[in-house]
Length: 197
Ligand SMILES: Cc1cc2nc3c(=O)[nH]c(=O)nc-3n(C[C@H](O)[C@H](O)[C@H](O)COP(=O)(O)O)c2cc1C
Image 1 (cartoon, rainbow, N blue to C red):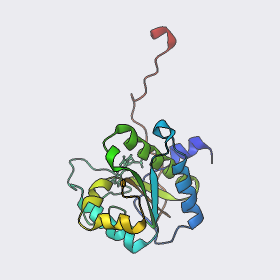
Image 2: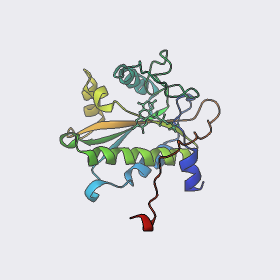
Image 3: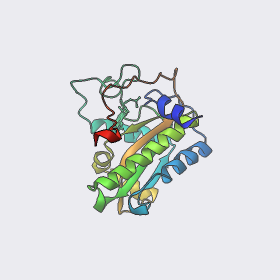
Image 4: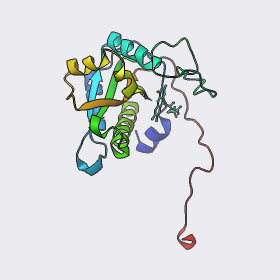
């Protein structure tokens, strides 16, 4: 697929089939994340990938509980989020695989470290779409792993204790049709021609 079509076509998907995602596809998505730009060229982020649906669901319930689910605006009508539909239990929407991008705990407040994690997530969702997978970036990772008993999971998975997850990427096969791209708001791009400087 053309990169421009991938960028325009990708949507945040919150309806997933139970079908497992092939390991090769998960590896390819993770690889795209590992190739993201990174501050100082230090490649300082790490990615954890899970594909156990029961485990993903149990973490997703904690994740949803970390959100104030009563916003004054909706997020999506065609792909309802935990804000739009209070009956959704998991913040990961029943996805079949879950990636977490992790950064160093002591640098968790540095904007470049946080930015590095999110560009990594962006690379992953674009590659996922290219591979025919649905995805959505999900927040509240720090809050999720601050809940009782959650940090032990990171130790069990073998994550360096100096690191913590900062953002999630849900992955899987879409349940239903893929939604069309959303129209872009006007006035968000300001091009300054040479004669105006
Ligand atoms: C940094 C970031 C955090 C997000 N967190 C969540 C989240 O916690 N839960 C969720 O359902 N969607 C989350 N999203 C997805 C947005 O809701 C989605 O990108 C937005 O509604 C636009 O829809 P689109 O991606 O289909 O264009 C997040 C997106 C970004 C970039």
